[in-house]
Image (cartoon, rainbow, N blue to C red; front, side, top):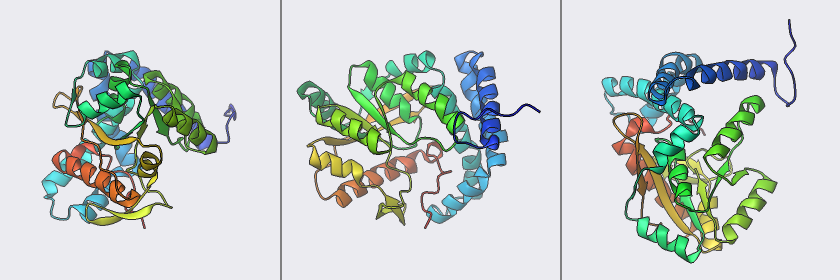
Length: 293
């Protein structure tokens, strides 16, 4: 049996998993865009999600936060949430096809004028989104319009997968900043120079503040609000809502979050995202352990 190469500090199981993912993506990427996106959604929902135990996790999160949800809606969510995740993943790997679709989308919402003014003035902006719809559609749409938007990302635990994942998100736009001391230093330099930063603060952070999300305590990073206050940056919620065709999006730029304490501003971000999820519940990544003690 051929030994798995070990250019990274990963396990053989991670290497094999990455080989299977690469094979799946290779097969999908030879298909026309309009076929590959829904097919990847189907594969994720019907094959990968059950193997990964996602239905159980989705149900547990819904039981905690939306206990009155009907079983028919829960069953629909168990199918639709992984479907959206699958679509999102292959869209990110679709490079120019995805970028072309995203860049044609108009910007809508109460914060568009403030965002445009900040760009004209060279004022820093932090765009806070969530694991909702396809968050990278916002980045593609803004970069194509000349916005100096960088993104903070958390490396994947599988180093072989992370290698090509970073290349894929880098194709959508630069610069990218990896979580960690070096990446944070580069990110702050970008922000202080008048750049814009995309950040996803909707995952559990062990050292985060105990804030509310769907009526439950959720550990939440305060860093976006703290940076906004320190560097006089606008803090603007932005989202890409997947439309009924499953392929296109509506880009929303909400009004900037008013200055306050970091806790108040971050709670406002949580409330803003929660309001959107309640309208489109199947577009958020309910697979996250957001309320883990």
